[in-house]
Figure 1 (cartoon, rainbow, N blue to C red):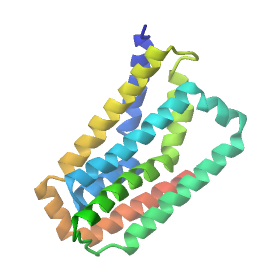
Figure 2 (cartoon, rainbow, N blue to C red):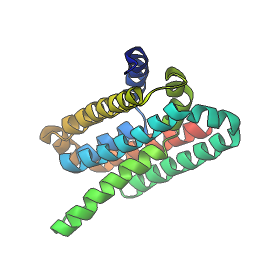
Figure 3 (tube, rainbow, N blue to C red):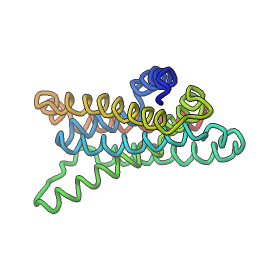
Length: 205
């Protein structure tokens, strides 16, 4: 039987955490305005998949693991922050360039790349690690049955999909995407600088 009070407790905490802008939000927003709705939604799928992974770890006790092994927390934070800084720097260096899609094969590779980017951005996101380890895990009961576990994961998947999916669809709207195209060089640099800032911020915490 599903422990609904526990599910709703996790739901309230997760909703508050997911809407706070971070690397995931920036990645979705940039993909939405710079490519197609489909590419942005594929990136969202990668982010949601990792959210389900982190939620599973949190429910199963990842918070305790990081408490027992504090050095692991430092390693994860440094690796994640390093990826964000690298990703932001690459975005700035490539600013102003216009990617072209010449064939269906290239389109397929690009979609795979968007999915991979979603996974990499979220799994290397120190904010996600900290949130699930320190906050999400404390909201989940110490022991949950299978039904409650499935309900919690379903909640995470639905909320993440709705939030990031809405961001992707809204920002890929032609007028918004068109406005981005006119300011692509500057917007890429702003997004890149923001991602670098988030990475540096994680290192200094």
